[in-house]
Image 1 (spheres, rainbow, N blue to C red):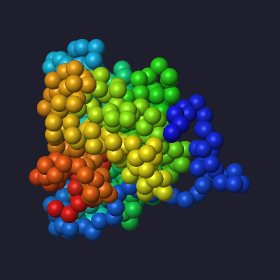
Image 2: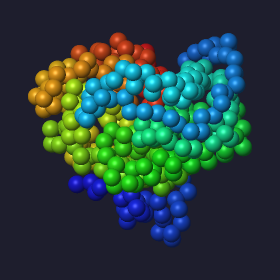
Image 3: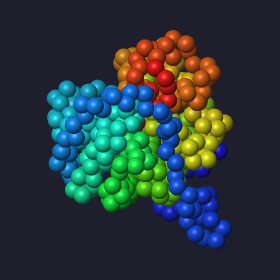
Image 4: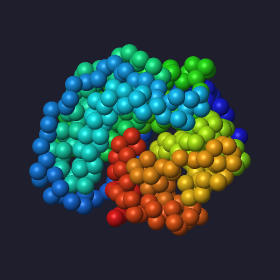
Amino acid sequence: MPQPLVTRGLSAAVLLLAVGPAGAVEASTLRSPFPQVQPAAPAAAMSFVCLPAPPAVRDITANRYYSDAASSVIDPALERRNKFAVKPLEDYLRSFSRMTDLYTRSGAEAVAACALGWLDAWAQGGAMLGSMSSSQADYHRNWTLAGLALNYLKIRDSTALDAAGKQRVEAWLHKLAHAVRPYFDDPRRTRNNHFYWAGLAVAAAGVAANDRALFDWGVGVYREALTHMTPAGTLPLEMARRTRAVHYHNFALAPLVLIAEIGAANDTPLYAESDRALHRLVARTVSGMMDPSYFERAAQAKQDEPPRGGVLAWAEPYLKRFPDAGLPPEWKEQIVRARPVAYPTLGGNLTALYSAY
């Protein structure tokens, strides 16, 4: 069985990963989870104009928008208030992700340089390193860091990037990862999907900053997530979301798949751990999207509409790696019809990175 995450100091296993026999920290560069792809549309960036980055958002104000204890019923007024408050964050990440997607498609170095400039502007402004108004604000920082770090890895090797700018950006991502960790180092926090997203954010920032300890923390989150899983492939804390149980199983699964991809790129075969537990979660979640009856019995609530669109972007790396995973053909066809599947928080257009279309 995988061991629970050690949050108040590195475990012996983590130290073995991070430190060599002589006690020196391993010097090898952590690798991006994304495959290198040949730009398919060099002309796509011909009309690209690099706009100035928006002002850095240092403090995050956000609010909870569910009206019930199970966090299954959305209060529309509270949801609107939260969306308005975090719109600058989401707009910034979406625009940045579009630039990294365009670089992937075109190979235009000017696009990569512009994207780095956006990150550098926020790095110099200390973005997201100020006060967090609530737990919801911490969650938005987790999601935004995950998206920024993953998208940065798509441009990291561009020859057009300014070395000093890269250094500032990677130092900022490193600071953000250390700002994210303490929330879940507090044992009073509920370790549900938000914990898994924090694991992805920290692991991705660890790769971006080449920090093995951050990578290991994210891997530890993944391993603890496997201990939460039932033999039936469900997550009790997500099942407790009642009408949104299927939705939140998918939302918990997404960061875990990306952590497993980061692990695979760095010689840590997470997909196989705990008797291939992640595959059970995939199978149960996908079956729930196709037929929610199991979830309706287990959660004792009729399920909302199943998740669609970008939040299913995790399927692209998963299906690329496991094309014969035994998932329903009808569901695979839904993914194909939805292409390109893009989700900025998971690194943007994952179809372009993992699947020809």
